[in-house]
Image (tube, rainbow, N blue to C red; front, side, top):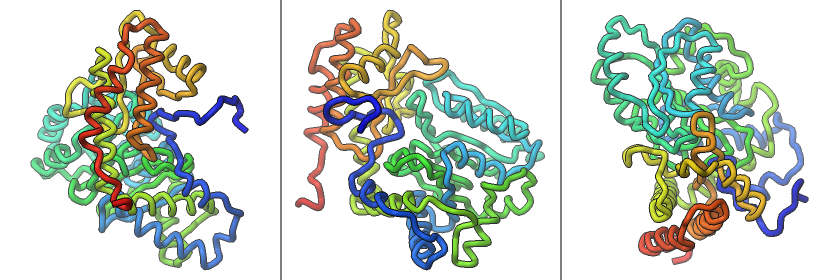
Length: 401
């Protein structure tokens, strides 16, 4: 029974947590097990092998922490850096801000590169900092691949090219919480040293797994990193990997079975096709926003996100009222504007276990809400624009051909 009942299904269109597939729910609907029995290590071994595929790495070492993305952040930082180490970190929205706050509280020397919210990371400044850092005092570049607060995606390939151009040895640490399994992500090709994601985003699981993948270079750095870590210590995991038991403490059995089912669904669809599906969902949403006469918070097309769209509202409308009305009247969950963009934007999440017809239902709901709050939208305009695009671009479902 829902805590606050509403007829029908809740239309969940926040950018995480997302809809959970029935197959995953069924897989998790099970009793506890002894994680020291042969069954759980055997499953964990296959999970670790398969998790590497979503990062597109053959050389990385994955870790499955019973935590959130925030814990995965901490794991990435404390295993590779020492207090006082200099990092370069890009402030482009609420979640990059929170990661910077964590770096500062962990006593790193954070060199903050700030952009206007709605813009991507300023890579020209990064280039100038690397060019002047001949002593290699910068130990890590920390960047959020997809800033969920503003719907901005950064170009990681360019970051790697800049690092290589100056032959700079800084580690590249990437928050892929709202990108991995939805946007193109290539850990090995882009030379990412630590990548991380959370189970409640494109993997379409409940919150509770922070998944970290470390390159050989990052593992080597962990041998000399002096930051205090206990719960998130990679070395504890690596010891148990060697033993073949994998777990230094009790894992969430149900989430492991859920992860197995989630990965199976992704591989059945095909990871590249999953990424293309998100591209269609993102494009359709942006076309709807344009048809409504509203603006995307993201300033340039090169930064558009295919997992979340932040929609700017006119000054006479409070975007939080749109979110409230969506939930109270239409059983539709939209994302609030956060921090600097609070009251100025609402967010449509389009990631995870989601198809095109579900998205059209959301867009129809948004149109009615805009009408409710006094915005002169033409009902059906956004839905028509999105539908016209989708009708020409949705492929046949491979398993049904």
